[in-house]
Image 1 (cartoon, rainbow, N blue to C red):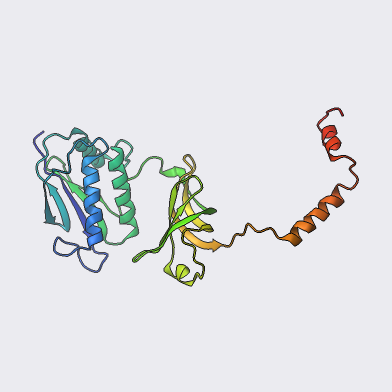
Image 2 (cartoon, helix red, strand yellow):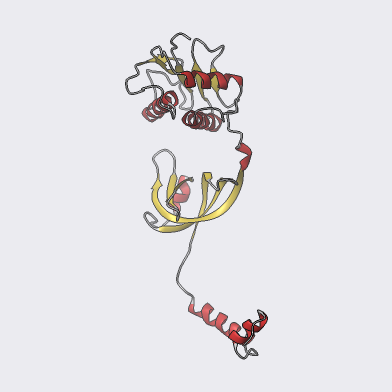
Length: 257
């Protein structure tokens, strides 16, 4: 196969205008450029993206590489995306990028991504109408649950979210409404908190994703002395006819004393 120019394009009208090389939000440009670099390099790093030269083109905002001579896995992955929308045969890093693009295209109206090259019969289009996914998609179920962890980040300029460090050391990103954070009067940053969330849960890996905060749940480790005394009295009343609890338990187990 002759050397190929790969063109990856971002189409975005979500800001009320078409994203072009002349006008693009800086954060979107940085994110797209990082995704392009990750997609081209792949997990196997068969392309040296640090030294790869590109052109920024219209359509809407496109990054076009100089001719790439040898990248058999990249070319095979692009062909596979033309032949079907299951991503399990793709390089792991490329799969992550495409899944991220597919999610963005579904969540934000007017956003789509295209990939094209001379050897491809047609461009790959990731849009709200496409369904690029892994075949483990049905392993994710919607759940509502409580999580407890240390809040390490809270807020955001454009999107409100919280980053929670869970007891196992992992970090869970949770989106929320600005109003919920605005009305919360408690300083929760760098403190343990209990949260009620909705999320997608992988029944195999137990991973949570796309988490959304419903509410902060007030949780106290303080012992209520009145409740403790009440429970103690109930326990004493229930066990009053038992001579020695140790002997009684041993008898229930069939032991000798």
